[in-house]
Image (cartoon, rainbow, N blue to C red; front, top):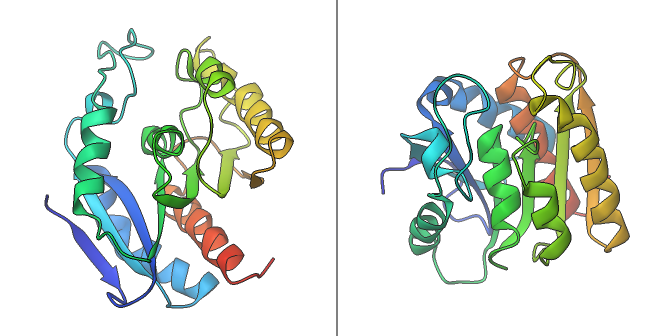
Length: 212
């Protein structure tokens, strides 16, 4: 797979992110912000995503906005990512923004490879996802959740559920003993994606070092 690599390749902490074409230009800023918040003891690997709705969706779903529906390519994508990770004692953290954040959450139920999940403004409005979370077992140790404070204020009936769903997810993770946090950011879904993703990864790294 093609990859974008930053940071210290010898670090025992590896940040993994699914990256859309629209996010590539902001990666250097994101990496700089992670360093600013959590230091430079990390390696970053970004894997490009061409078909966002297909490659990151856990199952098929009808269009929610526009004409494009959702595929079920997440299993294939996750398998490809796992095949690229070294089988050693490094700690891997999977994260992403929007649908990539949902993919990261879903992956936390599929494998124990990832120590932490960074779900920045995840598309947790995705049809059937809360039901899925209720039935499956989460395998990561930590999870970071965030949302913009205006994201749930939409006329779209499906997407407006994002606020209630992420509040539920936060309480759910607390109840099952997962170390978690829910951070509210200012603005709608399209504001400061690189900053929000950086904050998500930085929190995981700070937790790893025992910081608050």
